[in-house]
Length: 176
Image 1 (cartoon, rainbow, N blue to C red):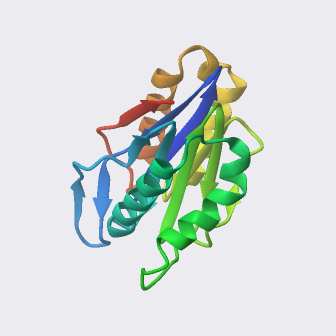
Image 2: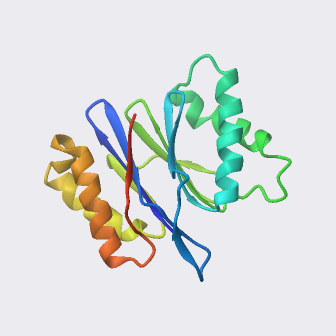
């Protein structure tokens, strides 16, 4: 249970995430980050911790082989390479969602491994998604994301934690 948010601000994408980890019964703070930078991209994860580790490893192998990462490749070839990289997994479903930040763009991938590009300059994944999207919409309409992206994302996560049992501080941030 978690939330990961992303927002485009100028030439950068900011990712932010909470640190809550739950198996339904137990809840605890996680030390492993839910957002990471691998080369020129930022990744945010919600869902299975095990699958997150598998995906990070697979994406690191994929990016090590590439000389350049482009939006065109992310939209077309990346998913084929990701599917091939995790083909030995028993279940190739994502078991959550993955957010990708690259070159002033946000993408997200849901359980079915389909890549989506949000229409608006922000996105959210995880169990706190609906609440976070409402806070992000207000922040976007108020131009808060443009002027103070990190502070605004902190406020978005705090608002989300007030209304969701599955989102908790401390928060982490990544600028791509």
